[in-house]
Each structure stands twice: as structure tokens, then as C-alpha cells.
Image (cartoon, rainbow, N blue to C red; front, side, top):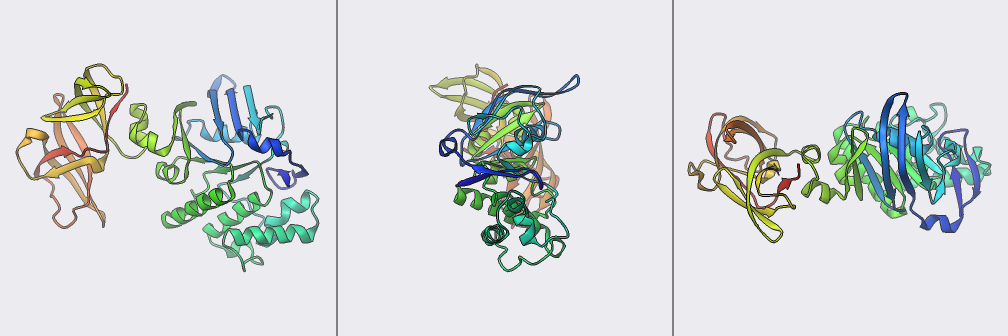
Amino acid sequence: MTHIRTLSPGTTTLEPAPAAARARPAVEFRSVVKRYGAFTAVHELNFSIEAGTLVTLLGPSGCGKTTTLRMIAGLEQASSGTILIGGENVTARSAAERDVSMVFQSYALFPHMTILDNVAYGLTVGGMAKRAALEAARDKLALVGLAGLEGRLPSELSGGQQQRVAVARAIVLEPRVLLFDEPLSNLDAKMRRQVREDIRQLQQSLKLTVVYVTHDQEEALAVSDRIIVMAGGRIAQDGTPRDLYQRPASRFIADFIGDANIVPALLEGRDGALGRVRVGMATLTLPHRDLADGPVELAVRPNAIRLTSDQDPSDGLLGRVHFAAYLGDHMEYEVAVALGGREVMLFARTPDVDAPLSVGDAVCVGFAPRGVTVVPP
């Protein structure tokens, strides 16, 4: 087995890969800080990524996720702290010495080369014989579904196909860590779904270690073993997609990971891990998450809101439809309700498209047993 230390064309070296290194955590950040003059872009990051997993760095623009990815790649140097790849301290190493490959948002393919030559380029620059490099490149193109297209130029391919070429060019080098920088942002919605599925299946079948950057919450939920959500250069929450969606650690996470209504409520007592939470006339039984009795906030997912024309609010809230939209397989509504002495607009999503509500309709708002959680302050 060999591994390729590479990041971009012309910076590739070929050397033996120590077998023991493959068993170590693939990436570790220990108190890593990145400053640009007086501005701190990343504040003391601490995390580790297990080999063979796909971990997504997710967050809004300016949160520090791309800077973090570039520090893994060696395109940015940490101001302080330690970065380890495969147990080796690479903090001061150049990009070419880190045994990583990056798939760029712009694909970065050579326009004058066939896609076969594009994929083989890193291998030939690293010293592999041309025949062997082309054979390896051909195998990887077949792996990403591009067999038979080896002689085409990048300009003769669709955006999705060009992205697959970029992936093949990265994995042919057998890097310890594969990095994706917003890889689907140039594709349309349908192609994004297809390519993200391809990336996930490839990562799982080859047991690749992947660090993936995106600002798209749905994309992160679909492809990740773990998601590290960043905000303001810090880690806001680190967990599985299910953890983040069902047990958000803060109002920011609840609102950022999928749509959520933030609703004022009252925690009125507890029985073990469960608490009695009152919202209007409705009483819900939810994990209290160690919060004290009194005012709390709930994150309510749009599909957890039940809308009926029943005017008895004994187990819910009275409201009025403010906005309605038909979206094929479901309806979306905005419903105005009175909560905590003020008007609150709730966003609801329902599967009933045959008997839709209309703007101005009075409704009773209820809550499903799933999709509602107490949010820590």
C-alpha cells in the first residue's frame, strides 16, 4: 500500500504508508486558533475525527468552517495549537506534506486534458509509470460512474460529471483524509441530491475519511456520520445528525438545523427525566433536559404542528391562517397565534393537499408527540 501526499497539481510525492498510522484518529485539533491580525477567525477548536467516517463542518457564512478546512489542508497555518493527521503533528507542515486531497467547489480541472489525464496527473507527477497511472485513473473513473468517457474534455461534461472527475482525481491518490469544500454549490437541486448520494456511497464503500464543508443543513444531514456546527469561530454543537435535529443544544442550533418554531412555554413540574410543559391550553410531556421549572422555550418542527378547524382550544391554541402555499406533496402555512402576551407566527407543514386551509381561516393549533423539544437557554 502506498499513499500520496498531495493537495494540488505539481505538489505530489509518493512514499510508503505506515500501517499503524491508519488505525489512529484521522484528524485531531488541539486548542487550535486562527487569527488574522487582531481578528480571531477560529477560537480554540478541539475535536477529533475517526478514520473511515464522514464529518461535516456546518454553519452560516463567516462561522470559520472553511478556515478550519483550510487549516487541515495546510492552505492556512494555525496561529496556535496543534493539528494532527494520523497521529502525526502536521501543524508546521506544508500542504504537500499532509497526505490529504481536496475536492474544490470549482472542480479545478485542466481544461486542455482529457478526464483520464486529469485523474492520472497527480500519479504521474509523483513518479508513477504512465501506463500504471492511466490504469489506476481508469479504475477510479469507473468507480464514479464515468467509464467510457475517459477521452472527453471537461468542457464536454455536465457539472455533475465534472464533480465526479474531481472526486476520482482525489481518491486515486489514496489520501489519508479527503476534504470537500462546498462541493455541490454549483449544481442544480436534482443533481445535488444525486451527487451527494454518490459521495456518501463511495465514502462508505471505500471507508474513506472525509471532512466536508457546507452551509446546507439538508445536505449535512444526508451525508454525515457526525456534524460539527460552527458559529462565530467556535463549535456550537458536535453530534450525530439525529442528535442535532432532535436534541439541539441551543436556540441557534434548533433554528439552524432544519426549520423550527421557537415557542415560549412553561415547565410546570417533572417526573424523572420527563417534564410537564404547558403551551397555551396544551400540556406536553417532554424531556426537561435539567432545566428549572418556569419559563422555557420549545423548538417545534413544522411537521409537528397539527392544524384543525376545531374551535375548542382545550388542548391547543387558537390561531388564524396568515399564509398558505401548495408545494405538490404538502402544504405550508404561517399561522398567527397569541402566546406570552404577544402574537407569534408559527410555520407549519402538513401532508393534506386535498382539503387545504385558506388565508383568514380560524384554526386550532395542536402538537404531535414527536418533533417538539425543550431548548436549553
